[in-house]
Image (cartoon, rainbow, N blue to C red; front, side, top):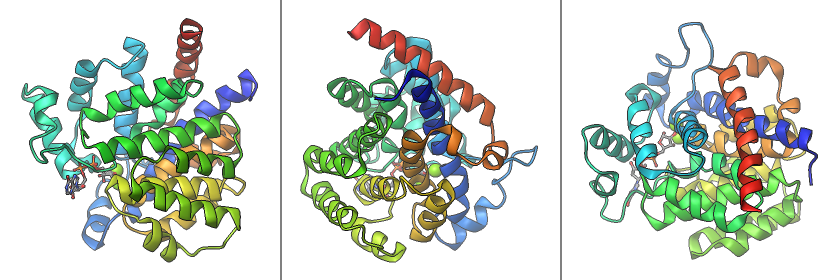
Length: 313
Ligand code: R7I
Ligand code: MG
Ligand code: MG
């Protein structure tokens, strides 16, 4: 178990790791058109690295928990919708959901407008880290609250399963659980064949310390926008680079291609949960959009976590 001071540093490292991964991965996301378009949005007016929807929705979730002390789905739906900005690069179905909510449609209706079962994109998983911070000590509550936070935009069971697995990996990293143990728990907690198979492949690779190339990582685990093509990939990357530098993680993940901002942000959060803020390069933090705001949100989440844990226990 980490000490209180270590845990607080891990909270900051997790949230900053997520936001930095997002901002550093965004210029490498997608094909030629996406990369070309991002050049126009990649900097803030003061020249800092701009992050995307992954970080925006994580901030929304964090602020919503700080306000309500738990997941209030109606409040969170409105919060997501009011923060929506096209230029943050939201997924197409998620954009539609949020625009509908903004117009007054109930989220339970809006989230089924494009896909009958709801979206199976990784938009729920990319923000589940925030709940791992709050519920890292209580696996059942973690699953329940991630499910509630994901459903609002991603009702599909696979989107929820991916979000729970990423959240679980972050929570185990916060608790300093060994990387091999983490992937074993991810295998055990995978309910569907597609997640389980990929988690088992990751376990074999990590167990044998195999030097798998970025191309083979993408080919076998996926690098796409669907939860099934990105959640296990990010978990694998976060675990593989757990004892290497943050820069090495990002350099490798950029080479995996596809949904790079989200792969970097989810694996960056896992890396940060293991290694803490103290190990994140200062020059990267200084160059991040709203770095101080995110750091202070992480500190406030830490205080809230302590209060919530006292109530639960
Ligand atoms: O999941 P979502 O919020 O996207 C997040 C991604 C991250 O990479 C962000 O960084 C941002 O770049 O986008 O967005 P959605 O639009 O809900 O889902 C993403 C995509 O998954 C959709 O546009 C579809 O291509 C696909 N998808 C589905 N395809 C078939 N059947 C989602 N649900 C389905 C489905 O049910
Ligand atoms: Mg994004
Ligand atoms: Mg993405």
